[in-house]
Length: 180
Image 1 (cartoon, rainbow, N blue to C red):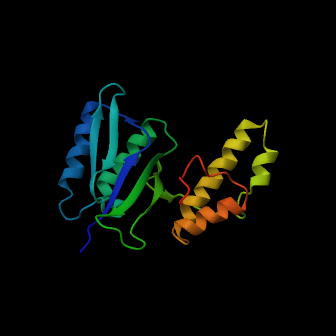
Image 2: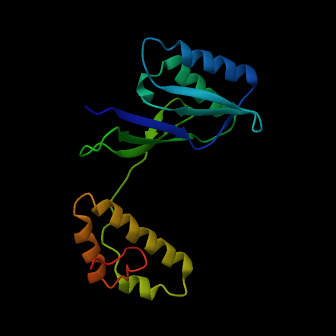
């Protein structure tokens, strides 16, 4: 049997008073009827709270009172939103058991989820060669190439993916040892 987890971390601290932090912390701890998994930590240097979930994030289970209070603190701080990244994993490898997403809490007490799209075409070695002298573009292309590699490994074996890179003229010798 496998255990499934979803950890969450806010991308920034929400400025507030220590009294507001204490009130929010009490609200989150009082949510006994549901398990949202969220906690807050006081950030002394930034004078605000940091929102996170160590084990099982479920924002939809948070009480309306706590969620709306967070939104009001975001509004009071003049922030456009608070973005939260979520990573999912399992205690043992099971097909489809890992991934992630992100959501934003807006000052009007609504949620928005990040839209994720796959690229339209694979990056080729020719595109990389043509980007010489344009370091930023080259960096973006290399990021896309390695992102494709990471995504494709789920659909192809590692050996097949390495062969695809070789076939596209990518020198992989510095990254992997050739088998004898």
